[in-house]
Amino acid sequence: MGRTIPQRLFVLLTSALMAHVSATDAAAQYASFQQRIATLQRQNAYQQQQVAIQLAVQQTNILLFDALQQNVSGQETGVMQTLNFQPQVSALQTALNQTTLLQQSNVRVGSPVQTPLQQASALQNALQTTRFLQASSQFQGGILTDQQIQTLFLQKASLIGLLAAPSPQLIRPTPGR
Image 1 (cartoon, rainbow, N blue to C red):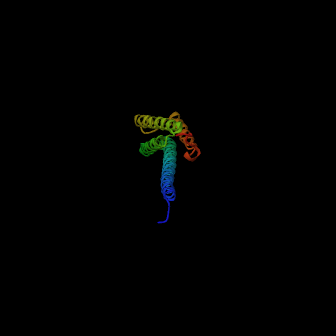
Image 2: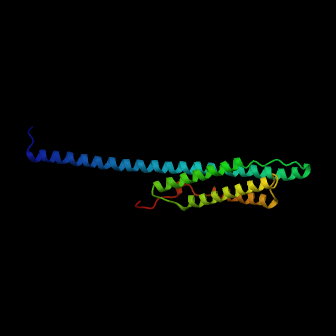
Image 3: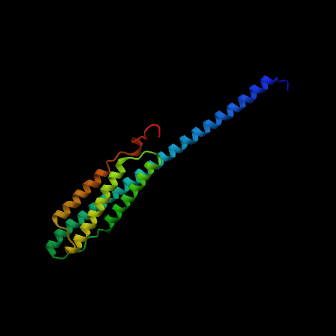
């Protein structure tokens, strides 16, 4: 106990300063951790959205194949089977839902990006087109016209274009957010 008052005061102030620095470091580490979690959530949402769009492309391919085969075999045999649009409708709806989740994850981290909004619009258009083609097919005895099949090809190209969106790790939030 041989310390003088200035020495005690120095030890006390040093301890207080160290506690403050430790608290500041902990807060900074927590903020960094939260930012990393948000980035991983965005990347996960992006990957799930891309998988959903890939599934929509696959279902469009299947529907195209069935429609083409239906038109050829139906002309030869005169027997028409109804095309099954439901897998494509479900895939497009899932892709739209995943795109909405991606947009929400971007907004949560303070980095709203136009790409998911544009993709959601394209997916909504594809869904409306598919429902229109489904209704037309039913009205036309289960087949699609050549022009309607061409519409499916264009829809497939549009969906493939959605797969070219940059991943979130390439899109950085603006400084100061």
